[in-house]
Image: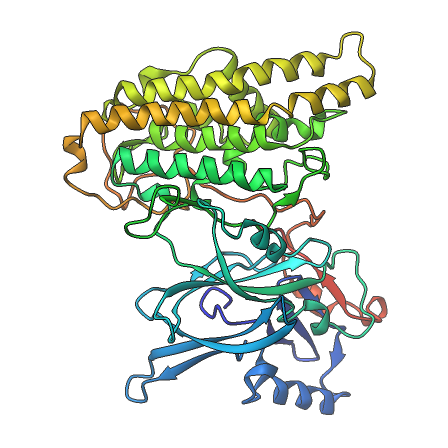
Length: 517
């Protein structure tokens, strides 16, 4: 229901047997289940619930009334729509209502899952300026800083998403629970709406090698500028790097988006304990994957994000035989990153830096330039890996010594960025000289990045193109979060409905695992 009705805040349904009934409520904090009641003894309550569930009031039904549709009476189809934002002005501390026209040609971006951020993206147009915008709705836990804080910091930085307006505290899940409700599995979530500039597609849909290089190079510069202002992104992935708008100037040809789980740095690193539950698993650094088993664990810093950018580049270079056409089988190098255990994935990734990159596995389309780029990028990260390994072994080092050493490793910011950017600049110059490849004159449409990898552990096949509709692609599934929201899957059984009311004096919250925080 949340997938098909992106403007839904919550959903309620009534579970009825021949004797009992209970109300089940779903929202971004999970599931709330009321106590059982007798439909024969509490007939009035049953009628009240039925009337509530069939109310003509959209607010009572759980719909966000700031999103409105115009329906064609003849067909019953939505023909137009609007999104209204109570835009907050930081200077005057006042709000102004602004209504945007929905672009009906582009479907909303909707994340799967119920519990979690529930991120939804609305494609819209400002009726005054005629500028295309993306309106993002997301639910954060009330313990997490609002993304607005980081978006304010990013204002004016080329290569990083730009916020135009916002409305915070649109709703909170606490208001959908009984007064004073408490539950071990309940995390109150607050809805934020942000209006941002509209950009291009994900770099997953690159059309030329040069286009991809420009995008990643500009994102590197943007990431550095954002870090210099004290913000660490922490969720670098293919999906979070977009191409700039058409005819974007230098510096804006690639855009880093999604600052939901970014943090303010302290002494150049994240003040939060590193967690493998934060970010997009496929692109996580070795240190983050190994964090649960290390004490002390290296603090999360810019080097972890740089390493993630390396994995983004590697993902595209090892997988695609040309724009829009991936291999029929995921290369062994990428399969290694998909193993279930975090520690195993970390060891396999570490081998990429401590031994050598399997350059022979790279499809010919990319040419020597990209092989050299990967080697030079690797050359920036590998020494850091070795330094961390020495500290991790901790020979003649106290825990305090290790913490200090890890912090020192994270301080060589300018040099690291300069080397990586220089490698990209060199690659860009070489690709410009080479010109378009024959494969770039015929464009293909890349398959969906979130297609489930059906044959991840199958033996590698020879490099041959796959049809975009059938090619298996590594999933970029996000980790739950570092909010501590872990819960066993909840399966409804008849006994759940018919269980004795003796143990259910009050309603309970049931949480379910989510793929995003």
